[in-house]
Every structure is written in C-alpha cells, then in structure tokens.
Length: 178
Image 1 (cartoon, rainbow, N blue to C red):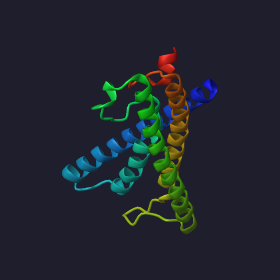
Image 2 (image 1 turned 180 degrees about the horizontal axis):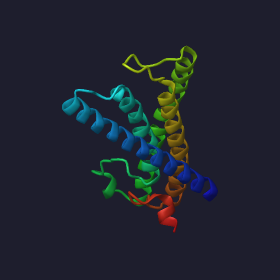
Image 3 (image 1 turned 60 degrees about the horizontal axis):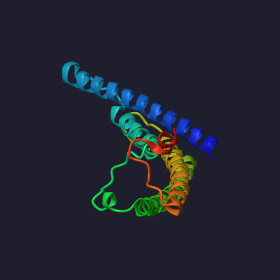
Image 4 (image 1 turned 135 degrees about the horizontal axis):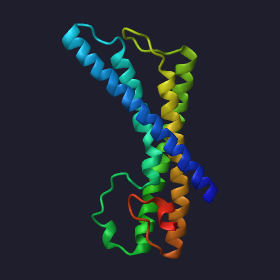
C-alpha cells in the first residue's frame, strides 16, 4: 500500500509541476498579449485559446495533489466537535461522494475525449488549436483524483473501524505516519 501511495504522490507532484509550467506559459503569453496589444497594436495570435487550454491543466493537474495533502476547502462547523471515529466516518462519507462524482466525470470525459479525437475538434479562433489534448488532461487529472480518493476511502474506513482521528489538513496520511 505504501508503494502505491508513494507512486501516487509522484504522479500528483508531476501533474502539479506540469500545471505550474502551464501557468507560467499562460501568464507569459497573457503579459505579451497585453503589452503587444496596448503598446504595439499587435496582439499575440491564439492567446485566448492557449490560455483556455492551460486552465484545464492548471485546475485538473492539481486536484490529486491537493487531495493527497488534504488541502481542499472544507467546512468544519460540526467536524471538529465530533469524536475521532465520527470525524473519520464523516471524511469517509465525503470521500465516497467525491469518488462517485469524479468517477462519473471521468467516465463522461472519456466519451468527450473520444468524440473530440474522432472529429479532430479544434478551436475557432485565429489559430486553430486541437481540443483533445485539454480533454485528455482533464480525464487524466480526474483519474488521478479517483485513485487518490480510493486510497483515502480505504484509509478512512480503517480509521473509522479503529476509532482513530483523521489526519490534519495539509499533511496527508504520509505526514501522519512519518
């Protein structure tokens, strides 16, 4: 199980790094577009299309990493006042709902990816960019999150069974074990 968690962490970090590169590229293109448009009356062709595609990478590339670190936003109005077993059970229920949602999202996104690939779907802007790479990244990010949520569901079920408290936000299971 530790081997799987370590490899999941590596994949999640890789996706975050890829998303960071995408964010930097998007930022540089936007700055060049603003400067080019305002000072030289020459916008960067395809800036909007590139930025749209990198947004998918930025958002879906970071989901599994944020889940592993337990860094997603959560409302702890009742959670902190419950017993450790109930806290773990609440986390288990939350992760099961999230798992069901992202399984449906991934399943649907694979259909969209397949269709986009078949018809060679592309943007309608100045420069035609294919859309299937962004759809592939969305599917990959969703699958990675599903894998991380599955690990979390197993860990939450064990903690609930034993009556243990869930790990604190920002640390993940590995930080608690180490």
